[in-house]
Amino acid sequence: MKSMLTSKLVKSALISMVLIGAPGAGTAFAQETLPSQPPQAAPASPEVSDSQIDSFVSAYQSIQQVQSQAQQEMIAALEAEGLTVEEFQMIAQAQQSPEPSSSVSPEQAEQLAAAAEQISAIEASAQEDIQLAIQAEGLTPEEFNQILALVQQDPALQEKINQQLAQ
Image: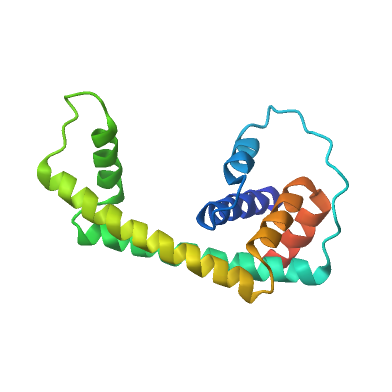
């Protein structure tokens, strides 16, 4: 349960980092998904206060709500254009495929473009809401990301945060 919660925390936070445009988000994701890399000696990490942990956990929980709402809105946008998530993904892949056999009808291309425009607007709104959620807890996006990086490297800090999330 603990590692599942930690994994969920890391993945959700990485999505948040991508949404708030955090530098290094892709690197953090690559490090998470490539466990064969040898661990590197971490420089002395700054202490994270209990109040910072509380703020981080509250911001994280708010971010989860924003992401859940955005996901529901994206699905609704697809459905409004007459598409399922699977159809959207297939059409998008077909449009990017160099193979002539994977042609996309003009109607499908139109549906894809309309849905993609709505999804882009939803993502922009979610990004803004995530930044506001972080700031509402007294953190900057940079501080949130620094704490996230420490959480990924410090098992004791992971445990503290997991305990608060489980409450």
